[in-house]
Length: 73
Image 1 (cartoon, rainbow, N blue to C red):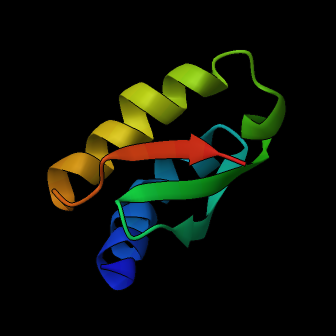
Image 2: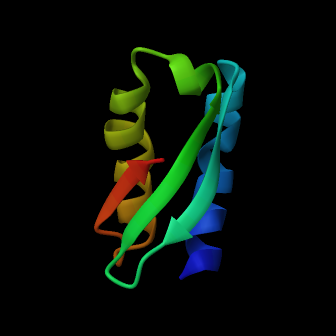
Image 3: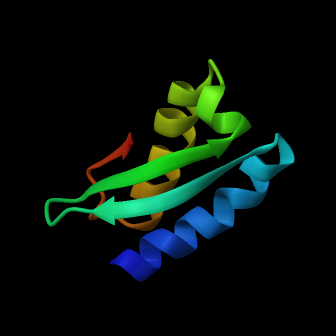
């Protein structure tokens, strides 16, 4: 599952990098919670939580159905 999640993150990474941000996969729990670290402009962006839930989490859930939630650490 980790490889599929990493590939899904890599697929959306250019969109984040275009705005000066990035994201790093930190961990995946057995119950499908993905921990990521927001980097660059994303780490301090007021829209970061929306990007996390409506962008990253939505994409990961559609590509890897085992993902239940995405959280920032």
